[in-house]
Image (tube, helix red, strand yellow):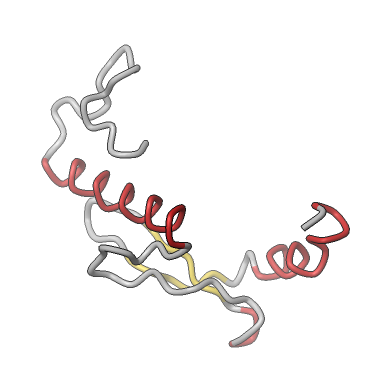
Length: 97
């Protein structure tokens, strides 16, 4: 989590004996999370685009991002649309925001 490629806090280093691709993926994921936290945009400092999840357009199909050492990518995510829409419609009454 957050580019912990030294395995600090783990009894067994999860990156031990892994290819450099795992460290590169950890770095990309961390940059996306930090970009989202600091600028509300996971695309800050990234080459690939993580599209905005918007289940209200395109027939309720949003996009999620699949992380992989073999190539990360955005993909359609239609199975979450109903739940995401419910949260959006009920956020104020349920969560107070």
